[in-house]
Image (cartoon, rainbow, N blue to C red; front, side, top):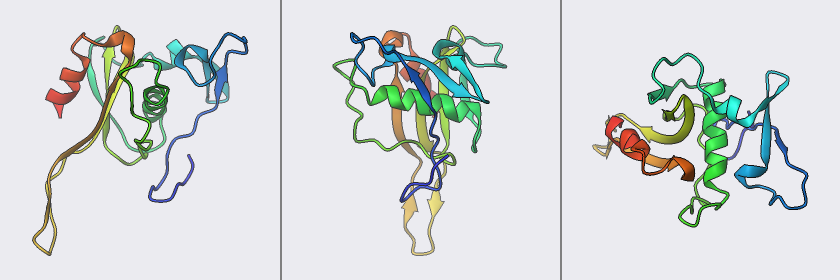
Length: 155
């Protein structure tokens, strides 16, 4: 993890990219593997969620440095590549390791995520912070399968 101004920490993962001249660096199809626990894991294997019996589950990712946070970071990176003409998340910052977040699975693979603040907070000044949904992203190939709806309804 690295510390950025305004954040406690964010996940930074080394990625192995395709070296073919026809590949556009930074796009999803150029990522071939993720370095995790000192070994290169193929991207689709990295996105497979371990330990879930439900292949279409909604899972809240625990805080801290863990594989789930790594998956959220990779999905966030996909949201910034503009591979799909409807993706325009370039201004959204990466989710910190302590911000509540969730992933949704399809076929056992993480295909979307959301970040949120679930609590109603009352400040001594009388101000309130309402529960807030900060970000929702679903990979283009998994859209129109109820993934975003599942993320929104679970919030």
